[in-house]
Image 1 (spheres, helix red, strand yellow):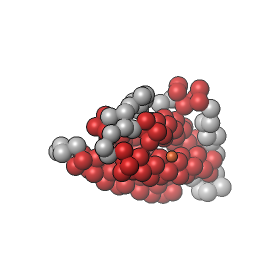
Image 2 (tube, protein in one colour; image 1 turned 30 degrees about the vertical axis):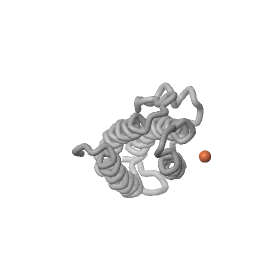
Image 3 (tube, helix red, strand yellow; image 1 turned 90 degrees about the vertical axis):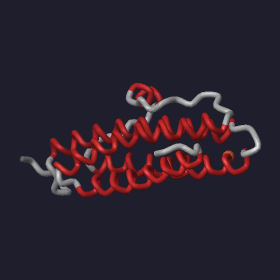
Image 4 (tube, protein in one colour; image 1 turned 180 degrees about the vertical axis):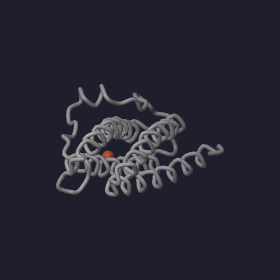
Length: 159
Ligand SMILES: [Fe+2]
């Protein structure tokens, strides 16, 4: 087994950075959806939702950077073109969404998809003894689960 400078298996690190690139692509699409609903939301709840969506895209933006820098730390190259993001992501695309309920549902659906990817990375990083990626995924998962609960509460639906 060949180790890299941070003491992790080289092959496993490459594989993890590939998985993280998939997460990065999906996060970028989610980020762009959040910008869209921040801009296009209409109705009586405009002021609070406009701000809430800004809070969420600011957070997503920070996470995008964390993911990209983790990929570099593991010896990979973060995807950085729109073409690569489109090709490597599957979270729903929100386009021309103006209704509050549609916007909140888009967030829930996107986060549900991101959680599946993050749990798969968590299993792989655990297996590779990669605590850095592991703790990052744990933090993301905990925060996003809470956001899903809040969005479901807003929708007055069971989680
Ligand atoms: Fe704005």
